[in-house]
Image (cartoon, rainbow, N blue to C red; front, side, top):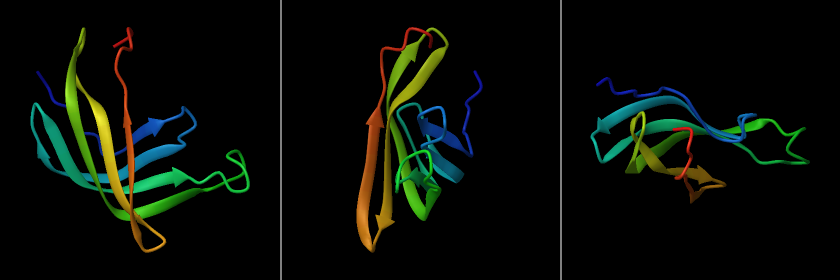
Length: 101
């Protein structure tokens, strides 16, 4: 079975509200994947429709918590660590239960 190691990935919202770009994976296994990335986040200032994406280069990403689907295993949790205003910040989300997978 082929393993997909994406360079870019939209994390939330179909309009690309949160995404990873220029990702370089340093490890990839059946249980987790880690890498370096540029984290792109819509800060919704003054509102989400009018806000440009803010890029946070030199971020790290971890995919974990694999779940079985009818199309094979997928990682169900993503953790991104990035620097915002000189301080470490973390973005985390998870998804399970999508019957279309």
